[in-house]
Length: 254
Ligand SMILES: NC(=O)c1ccc[n+]([C@@H]2O[C@H](COP(=O)([O-])OP(=O)(O)OC[C@H]3O[C@@H](n4cnc5c(N)ncnc54)[C@H](OP(=O)(O)O)[C@@H]3O)[C@@H](O)[C@H]2O)c1
Image (spheres, helix red, strand yellow):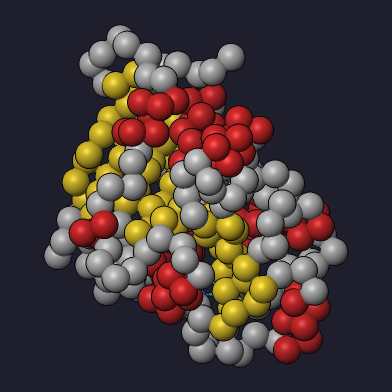
């Protein structure tokens, strides 16, 4: 059964079409000349981005519903190698209903998928590549090990997007060259930190889970230098699914 989601302060349940409107990619002015970059994360009420090294325990039906609908309308899913290693990411990216929805609108059945990795510590024979519904794109560095690159080129397009680290601006330009205007970034924290430092976070969709995770788990962001000034966000939308909050924040120009 579909998890019910309502607008905060309202009892009316939102349909999938209403949720898609609520998450429309309708801010081209926020990203002139480059793809629009939307991040999607889930956090516990005490700020944990993972429980026992994975985010699965933080999400519930409402979070999964929005997660799927955000994927449905994206051109490309961008994800850090650490998240792929932790979460697996193998198999279909979308359920059958979402695939049909896209096909009916003249889109490819799945969005593209792009992984960011400096070390290329990814197994070309592992389930992610072997079961991928679309040939993945890997964004890497000029200093990545040549033999790993050759091995991965069997199963993915491998493109250089920086010298020592993948530069978010170069990554965005490469995605634009491939015709991707709507980038859905699913983390993780280091990738988010590098995009934050580069001023390339246009939107943050954040599920706040009614859980106290305790421990010393990661936050949703990591690795950005301390010198990066706090970025102001505008709270554009508050939805709820039971005790779970589904927040939509938009970047505010500096
Ligand atoms: N709560 C949530 O919504 C959520 C979402 C996603 C992930 N997570 C959790 O986050 C944890 C993983 O954290 P993480 O920080 O390792 O995730 P991550 O950002 O996905 O992965 C970090 C790795 O990605 C690559 N990378 C990221 N940015 C890069 C850049 N600018 N240049 C070059 N390489 C870059 C590097 O890969 P190489 O090492 O291959 O060079 C780096 O080691 C897991 O526990 C996962 O479950 C939570």
